[in-house]
Image (cartoon, rainbow, N blue to C red; front, side):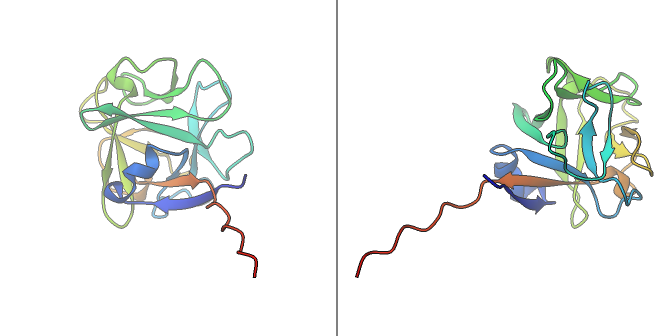
Length: 173
């Protein structure tokens, strides 16, 4: 079945979609990276960067789950490995996948920043000066930034919604 994508940039208008379907996480149109846009882990999960398009591997697909207290876990829906949860290293300089979600390093806050999209904020396990999920200008590195001052720290979610059911058959004349 084909999926349709709905671009969602406002947290308050899209939470129901995040929690009920796979999403693509796309850096904001205001970001410096123009050729690479989709958050994507490597097949092994040891690194996360931006990819130029959605691929059949599903590596650009994510599931978001409510972890309580306004926090979420973000889990790859792509190539299955033991590493599945979006994770930040202790210094916020490495974003990769992790096998479990038992620490704050795998918990995120998703917050609306207006017309440009959302910010994804690390909740614990990192220095307080590095909080915002951020893409490098070329999209080759994902890390945490200390400020939310450019499109590189702003994201959009594309919910993959199943197509609507076909209309019922017409009644015979």
